[in-house]
Each structure stands twice: as structure tokens, then as C-alpha cells.
Image (cartoon, rainbow, N blue to C red; front, side):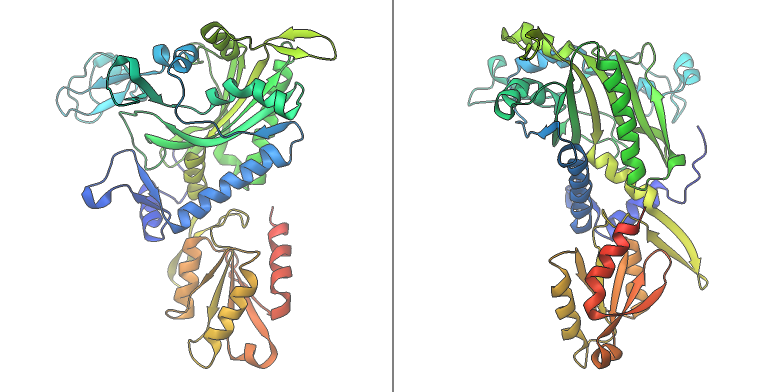
Length: 444
């Protein structure tokens, strides 16, 4: 595996995430729940900002894409039609000695051939399939007739509603439907912090096209999704495309590419772009008995649309942004840890810091915070030396700090401090909001 060149390690990211309130272990006081995590004050703000930017990119800035929020619980026949009941499995292998469990595709070929555990050297079992869907019962009686599943993906809810969306929105092909929502997978092997979890959120867009135009739109959406990460400021050297080859491509796909990010544990999938052909709508036609054809009113053609899918994990994007933003540098003989978030996704945009709590500086600072909080995510911090407070804000990824001192009382000027350069400039109080907007807009 290629050596990771970043300063972040999973240990550092996990430690900072808890220390600064990004991510906590679920049910920690009971020893923790494997594969489940809670998002703290900064984590939920960061997650919401990532989701908001994606939503803006995929709906507000697109004339031909609308949104949807479908139910987590769906008729169990949905998952038979989609192929999940039959095909949604992981090949799992156990070690007879240390009892560790592995996905077959995560063990190198030498260990697989020798049936040798990569952890302890013990003997490995044969591979066996394990279905990843969470199964439960609906209603008062627990029997096979009441089985229902927690959805393992959000896409099927879009397919079931695509004709409802056409009829209510008067859309014409080509068009897309976007959705952000929870999904659940009974992952036996959960590791690498929040990268692989049992409960997660997906950001998916399904783009419906006329058969024969699917390859054009597949290439187009590959370009658009790559450009999105460029605009987020993600380091380009840590991104790459991975094409699904024979034996790897999903049963429903004609072509599939992943955008991969170089995490501390290596290259891993961030988002998939798939040409799903007419597989899904044709299967739902077969299993439901309902006609899922699209009727082109202009040409009077009838056909089942092909679908180009873009699908990424919201929580996985959050981990990517934590890793990409993490930086360490030496400042005056000490290591400064700083999260270099793009200002548009930083959980706190600007922190307001009185130099002292006394002499009316605290009250003046709170007035300034109240002026800013309508338009910016703000924080107020009056505890400890100003240098120590700057370091706390650096670890939280706050791009701007406003310091109020005795000169502010004399001439209404404040100190604006920039996170990345640590430069400090003096500006008038009345200029703060406009200066912040200008600085945020200027970040590439």
C-alpha cells in the first residue's frame, strides 16, 4: 500500500474529534456500541454544512434536479426486486485462533492462499456469505409474514417515486432526483473510526435519461462530481478515479467508477458514479406489476429510462474533510494543530474574543457577536490567555477570530485574525461583516 504522506493519523483524528466535540463513541458509558457514533456540537454543524453544500450543488444550482425524502421502512418486496435479498452480501472469513473476522477482499492474496490470519498467523476458515441487511418485524406478531428491513440504501425510494415526481413536478427526461438520508448495513467488520459503520447517511442523486444517451450522461456526471471536490478545496493529489473491472462491478451496473480519497489507512472509496441501465425500474415493473415506463409527450415514445447514479456517504465525506483539513506546524517552538476547513463548511465561521472579561470588554464583545450571529456561525470565548484561545479555535477550524480590546472602546476598531496565516489586521467594527463575506468569497 502506498505510504500516506499526510500529517493526520486515525489516532490523531479520533483524539481531536472527541476533544473538540466533533464525534463521540455511541453509548460510551456502557463500553461503546461498535459501528455507531454520535456527532457532537462541532460535528453536527460540520455534517449539516457538508449536506447543505451538496444539496445546493445538486438541486438549487441545477434546473433539472429536484429533491425527495423517502421512508426508511419500505415494503419488503422492494428489496427482493432490487436484488438485495439475494445479492447484498459480504464474503466473510474468520480466524480459528484469534477469532478475528475479515472481509475476504481485505485480505491479501498470499494470506488467502495460505489460509493464514494476517493478525496472528492462525488458520482461516473458508469464505461464507453474510447478508448485510438489518431485518426486523413490523406489527404485534413476530413471524415471517411481518418481516421488514431497514433500508440499506436510499436509491430505491427514488425509483419507487420517480413517476410521482414526474406527475407532480412536470419534469421531462433527462432529469434527476436527489436525496440525503439514513441507511443501515449490518457490517460485521467495522473499523477506521467513522469510515465503515452500521448506521450512516447517504447523499445520492439518480439521473433518469433516454436509453442510448446514458454513456454521455455517465461521462458528464463524472466530470461534475470531480469538479465538486475541487470547489471544496480538497487536495487533488489525494483524489483519484478507480474503475470497477470484471468481477468487481455490481450486478446492476453497465459501468462504474469510484472517486477514491487517500485516507491515513490508504485509498478508499468516497463516492461512486454508476450507469445502472434500466435494471432497477425493469425489476420493479416485474415485481410490482406496475408500468414504470416513461412517456415522452413530444415524440410519443415509451421506454424504461436508464439511470446514472452518483452516490456518496455524508459521514464518510466528513471523515475525508477532517483528514484533509488536519495540519500541524511549528510556531515559536510549539506544535500548532489546525483544521484548515474551507470557510463555507467550518463549524464556526468567526469567534469573538474579549481580551479581558472586565471593564466592559465582555459586554462589548457580546454585542458584536449578536450583530454577527444572524449571518455567520459564531462562538464566544472569554476563558484563558488570548494565545491559548486562538489555539482552541485553530483546532476547531475557525477561519476568523475577532479580538476586542481597550482600543475598541476608544475608536471602535477590532483585531481580525486569520486562522491559516495567523495574520492580524485592525478594522473598524462596522466593517466586520462585509470583510468576512469578502474573505470567504475569495477562498478558492
